Length: 353
View 1: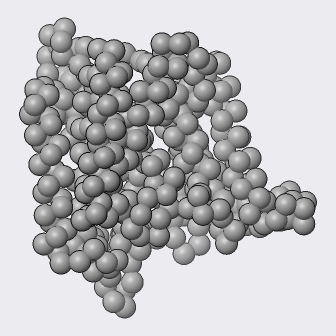
View 2: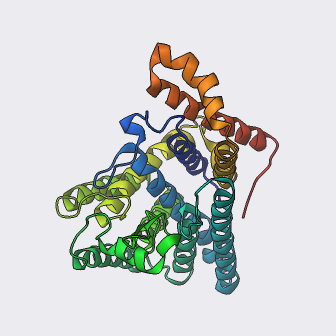
């Protein structure tokens, strides 16, 4: 079951990922295009949680109609696990590409697609075997409280010292996103412990999917408001933190995502507005993987410097300043993949894994 608004929001989310991840000059990036350094929540910090929320919604849209029709659970579970493995393997393959093409880049075990695959598997199995809404809400709440308790038991939320970083340092070591061999301190924003509350975001998507399928857009929007209020209040005791994926961050970003999806559903599916972003959304994996490889090739081949200097920096900086030049490169890079996915969509091409 496909819903145009979901494809559109997914596509806009992936486009936002590309825009944020591909600045022309990292020393000149507008603050509203940067992730929070540690505590806090900036506009880019909403991107990955909304993507994960849509993962949960998509699982619901794909599995619930089959389960309601009496489909056997074993084949469904097998297909969920196989797809999850393919997502994780693609994520690992992209990190191999980065390691081979970028000087000084080591292999990273965890990452965006690896976390997505793990959460996809767990949420898919949950949707198949725990179909009660009340039970899913109980699991969601338990995850948020358990993660809060674990972080509190760790004694501090400071970088390098919090429980999440200590686990990544001990178990991932040099396979983490960052690792200092001299101190033995590592950090990975998509690391081990943070995968637990990320799962809560996907479960929230499972529940949102039920409201979408039944046309309860108002209920979805009200739930979004309630989640943001709860997250905002919780942040007084537990700060928003994307890199730790704190429970307050789950509610704050998940609530915002539900509001955005409720609005998109009303505009696109109900009022028949054009589904801006749909082409990127139906080929989200292709856009993400393609942009990753393109970035590695451009930077690894050494053409990034001359390309940026001659096409963007030299013409634009004297007139508009270095921040505009840097953003212009990111916009152009994103536009290339936007147009490529639009062309693929017109030809009916789909990359599925």
